Image (cartoon, rainbow, N blue to C red; front, side):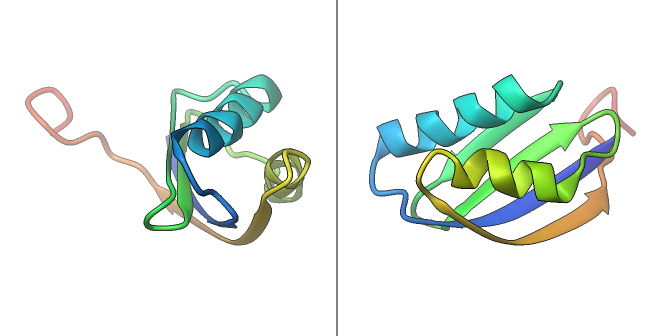
Length: 82
């Protein structure tokens, strides 16, 4: 599994976060996506690697500015993810 953290400028409210999340879900088969307007970032968890340019484009197409993308292996934490 992979975790992508995308710097996103322009989110001002909860609906902005929802628009970005919906755009990512429509473009990719992701396990989880969350956005934070206060941190200016969207976090995506996916089982397979994603095309970073397509991810940036999916977010930018919603009217928000997608910048740097950080990718790292994702290991689920908690009782069953040891």
